[in-house]
Length: 250
Ligand code: UDP
Image 1 (cartoon, rainbow, N blue to C red):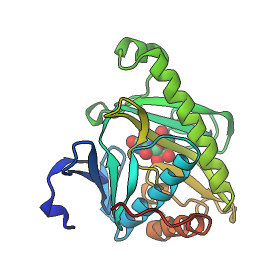
Image 2 (tube, rainbow, N blue to C red):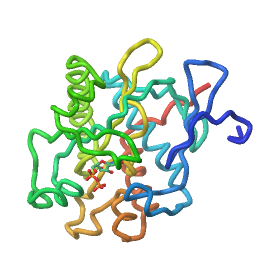
Image 3 (cartoon, helix red, strand yellow):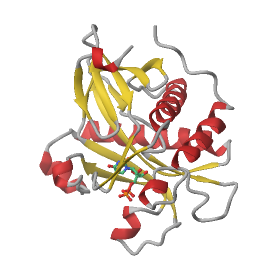
Image 4 (cartoon, rainbow, N blue to C red):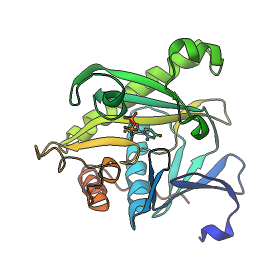
C-alpha cells in the first residue's frame, strides 16, 4: 500500500495519519524524521520509522494483554499500523521514574534521582505555546477535562508505567520517563493513543554503567551521541525476544 494513494488527514513531526474506508479507523505511518527542541533540531534516520512502529506495536499489545485500552488494531506494513480513530486530548502525560531532561533543567533536582511514586507531569499540547507545563490549578481554569477524566488519565498512566517498567526490566532496560497521549474513541472510551517508542520514552541499558552508552532513546539525537538507529534496534531485539509476533491487521 503506497501512502501517496491514501488520503492524508494529518501530518505530525514523526507520523502521518491517513483516512480509511472505515470512519472509525485510521492508518498511522511512522516516519524516519526526527525532531527535538520543539522541531528546532531536525534530521532523518533510515529505519527509525520501521523500528518505532514495531516497538510500539509490541508495547500496545502488551498493554492490551494487561487490560489497558489502546487505539492500536494491528500492523499493516513494517512502518504502518491500523488504529482506532480517536479525538486526542491535547495533553502530554509524562511519567518520571528517574529525574532527567526538563525536570533537571527547570528545578535543582539532580539527574538520576529516583522518584517513587513516579512523578506525573501534564503539559498542554500546543507547539505554538511550546507545550507548557500545567499546574492542577491551570488545568482547572483551562476547563479541558473533568475531574473524573483527570483521575482516569492518571490511573491509566500509572498502570501503563508499572506494566512497561516491569516488562522492560526483564530485558535489562530501565524506563526512565515517557510521554503518553490519550484520546476518546468513537465509542466514547478513553484509550492510550499516539505511539510508545524510544522517541517518546527514555530508556537506559542496565548492562552498561557508561552514562552515554546506556542511553537507548531519542536523547542520542538530542545530545548528538550518534548510533540512534542501532540503539532503537537494540531495544527492538531485546523486547522481540520476550514477545510474540505483533498481529497483522487484515
Ligand atoms: N516527550 C515527548 N514529546 C515531547 C516532550 C517530551 O515524547 O514533546 C518525552 C521525552 O522523550 C521524555 C519525556 O517525555 O521521555 C519527558 O521529557 P522532558 O519533559 O524531560 O523533555 P525534554 O528533556 O525531552 O525536553
